[in-house]
Image 1: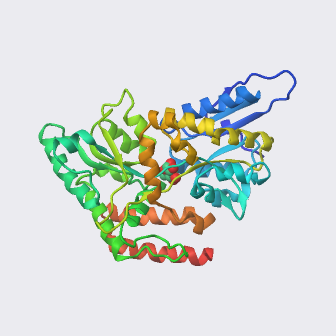
Image 2: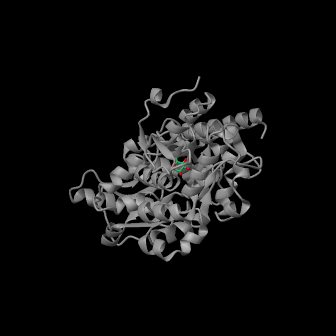
Image 3: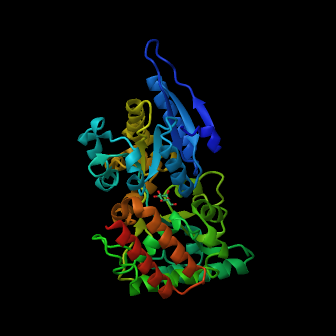
Length: 425
Ligand code: GLC
């Protein structure tokens, strides 16, 4: 028995298209995220398609946090709900949802796929099946307050040590001047997928650190990783508020955008919002690649591309794929880049003068894509959720001071070895 969407408490709204005289129009349900300006952009994009094609779009608003979305999809897809057509997917999900997604190979040409960044397309394919099309690219970035670094004559940090020192100094000085709520650094420390991204960045920023090697070996318990985890643990209640252990992207953005933090780790979407008219830090923000752990380490930003896929149980797969192709196509990606600052997955758009003029920030992001670090979702496949849960739980215990970094990584290594043995990767 399919689960009706309304019984899940999800808000739905209807966007009506103009029906041409003869064609029988279909209704397509699309799931849009409610994070930042995402919902508005998604409504606009899907309703342009509805107008062009005469179909109707039913927009379902997803929770802002990705972690609440995957279980929801799993529930809907397990019930083979025909209420579901187009799904927005995190880059780490195709492995977990592979049995429920349409193989788009028969609708989408290699030429169309070849127009996207290769790394983005690699993540869409499982066992040779094209289960999704890339929609926008993402990576972790360091946002900083230009005005405050200038005021206190501090450099843009290139290592986490420099970041810690400037944050300590400027936080103390700003508090002395009366802003008791001012903090040095906000990031995502809640035990959830976002923390796994922050952890992948810390480890990836060392000389040799990683969580799982390309060959699938568990490499997490290394001296480099222990050292950088000590640094991150030292931030809590020093340059980062104790509440950071419960922050997601939006909570960190709230503190930064209210003018109460010097540095913020976040995704590209935060740029346009931080510079919006209602933001108190408009035009005071700079952005760079996240720092290296040590001068001989690496810049590393977590790789996080959003994809669009179609449910296998859709009553109108062909029409749903058409909507996916429209949303992932150049016209819509260009509009989203200009209006929302979303980074295109089509390299050609980074040469588009209108886009770069409207949003010079995208040139920085394109450079940061050279330093991405992937989470082990390809190797772990449908076991990735368990792997990530284990990573964020054990590291969160160290950040909260419930265990020390070395003990946390020894435990994490043992547990990941167990998952690996069971999954036989
Ligand atoms: C962003 C990324 C996604 C990641 C999520 C974690 O949405 O695009 O890949 O899993 O943040 O919170």
